[in-house]
View 1: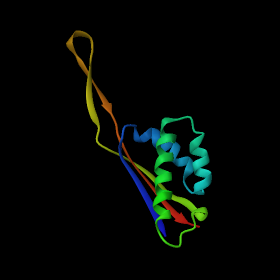
View 2: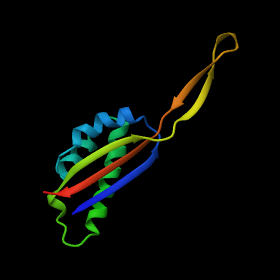
View 3: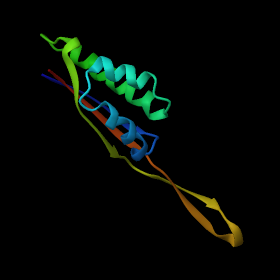
View 4: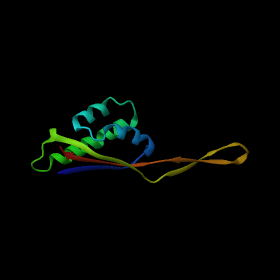
Length: 110
């Protein structure tokens, strides 16, 4: 049994989310939620919501023991980049890339 949740177009760089996502791969759901609750990064709050959504999706399926769920896969893909510019000296403009992420969490039973 697999359950999945996806969050798209999240306004945070994929590189920053992957740092936190690597900590919860292969963990039981209860431990992962505990870790993400006390992670002092923005990515921790975002991943916590996606993991809770995946657990809620798993509860909708019959014959699923929520206590036996583990996080089998977490992957963070880059979404579209918002391109902005900042004025610089002598009439130049430097580009600022505001990156977005697509986050996917897949749960599986032990």
